[in-house]
Length: 378
Image 1 (cartoon, rainbow, N blue to C red):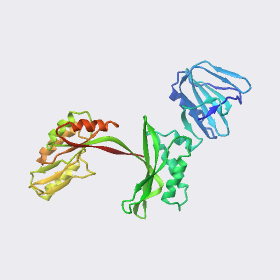
Image 2: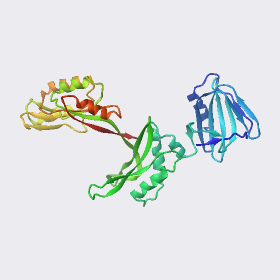
Image 3: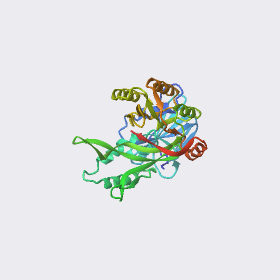
Image 4: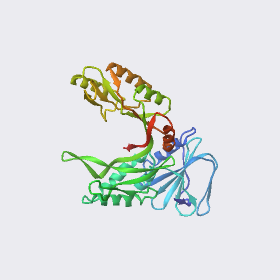
């Protein structure tokens, strides 16, 4: 929080600008342009919303009254000095008032930070949302680059936690602990910060970079690639359905996007040889809705004669994908084998318990399980 007391340090300075009404975004740009050649460090604060009246009283009793609609900015310089910039809404004319700072009178809480050349910490604080948090990656990497080469992983985590928690905003940086699966001992494995995302407090884990070193890919703690976070925004629904048309009917009866369909097993009656196996598998993997990362498992003469395929399907709320998959099954003579399919639905975050109960009431649903989706910020 910062408070400003106005002491007129120079005459009022007026600047003529454009001759038409300006929006707040245009006013922001006017102020940014005015300060583009500024050599001093500063932070620009904006009071959101058009203002209509302001009375400024100097320390020696001089009074300036502003009685027109305007956009209001405060420029905070280092060294206990600053200035107000007033941008007239009707034409963009600019009034600058040089001031000195005091700690008691005018409250700047809630003012928006437009730009900062004052401190990386202040700029970092202005980026604590999902849309802007990627802008903080270079700031963290600059800090990590300044640590000694001999610093250990644990010392890096401790330094990051201390540094991040020194910022003039609530970051709630903390070291993450987990149990080593080999030795069974608790150990540090990362660092996380907290941000507010539309009234939801999210924990973002610093995602340390993987780099090339000596011809190998290695994890480094000297820089981050970005952040990781998780949303409980999906649910596994294990059904009794072994036929894909029943699965599609169920999906189409709802208004949810589908993350994936698993456990789909298909038998092709085409000649069971390796050439056909490779040909069909290659064409399945070329489909935009087949998970080629997870892969398509294929077997010759598995439990039954023919070529068996396990095909994970993505985004099958898309009706065009559904139509194409039915056609593909016909093209390659694929018939479902007796495997009950599982659907992973995306659901609104925070509604998981509700949908566990709802899906559990369907007589063709065996079980449900809430799922988390991992997101990367780069």
